[in-house]
Image (cartoon, rainbow, N blue to C red; front, side):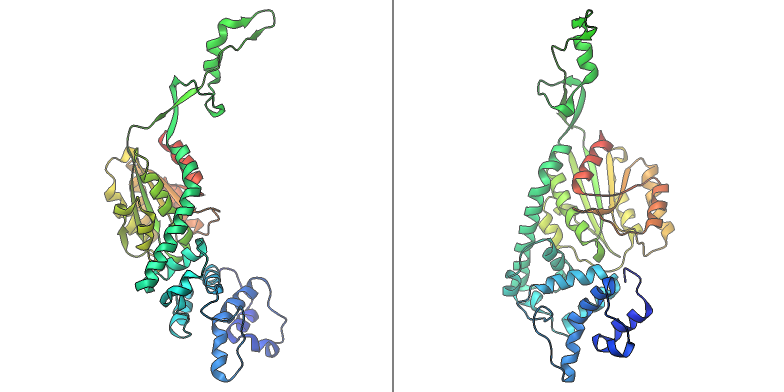
Length: 375
């Protein structure tokens, strides 16, 4: 569980709501109450087989209830990955929560949004036939909306850089050349007022990058990284649309999947993602190291919570190799709209000591970081 829970609360969560009187404790509150509501939503159905009357309403598992998606999101937020897998398996196999993966009409009634997209990615391996086609349409709609929101600012940041050798007639405050303006107008110095009379302002010109940069995105597809996986796919699509960049994207759990052939299509990329499973980061970093052609013109971005399942020394050695080769390395604990990370801070500190910059960024901030690194 993601927050500590008192022992008595734990027993109450195990035994269920009918244990309140026997345990002689007050109602659960805060984090424990959220855990109880999430568990009761599913395991409360167990009472139906014992002759007790089941509740109806928001706590039911009726096919038409959009709260199914809300509940799945809550479970993934509250419980660790291995527990989430058990709960979802029980929901599908024991309690018949199959509507999202078998009934396209149920899926079509749900509002397309990022929460639903996360759920579809989690259940991706169960989707077949017409449900899969509906899921693809939903994923495309959400991705296009997200891309339309992010792309203008990202492109503005990445399409050009300040050229401090040429000047532009276009007056933009962020391009203002202070020293050039002073030099240009020194001949208009007013000795009586002891001031420079500014007759002509100077501005730096933006020019397009001509030298190619390789961007390698190495993305952890464990269940806790759902939002970062989505934003990584969209970001890869945006970067791939800029001629000065060559984008490669790799996703991993205990296996490594190279999706570079779909870097320009976030939907196809996400349709090949399967959230969940273990994590072998070192193996993925080693594979990405083989993709490096020009270390001095390569940016390696590891998107992960840094919770390594393999011996940590292996990961540290692989990152150190990239840094020693002069590859620019960045470890992102989160890449989403909020950049609120949950990650292994001790491992992050060890990676930083190997030469990897560590951050949690929104896509817009990642774009500005890239400008700083490659300028």
